[in-house]
Each structure stands twice: as structure tokens, then as C-alpha cells.
Amino acid sequence: MSTKQSAALEAAETAQKRVQVEQFSFDVDAPGLVQVTNESHENPAAHQYGSLSTT
Figure (cartoon, helix red, strand yellow):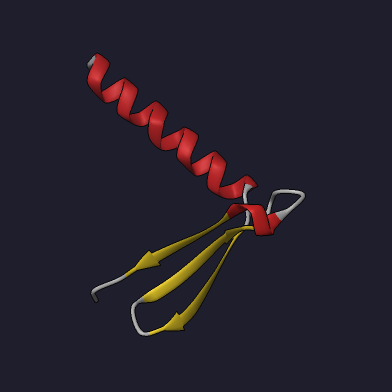
């Protein structure tokens, strides 16, 4: 296995662990507007992010 493949596998495993630990909620406020909240923090309101989607 090459170093690139090892690094990619390690990054994928790290992301998978993070997804298992952190809790996210999604709200669709209007067509194309999505609010994402990281619920795993003590103050989830401080960890809200907005996103515009064109699909």
C-alpha cells in the first residue's frame, strides 16, 4: 500500500469516527437554505452554520 493510500485510508477512518461522535441536525428553512447545527457541543446554538443549495 502506498503512502498516499495509507493517508487517505487514515483520513477516511478519522472522518468516520468523528461522524459517530458528533451529532448534527439539519433544518430546511426555505428552498435551498439549510441550517446545520452541531448538537454535540454544550452550546449547540454557537455551532450553527447556514448553507445555500442550488439543487
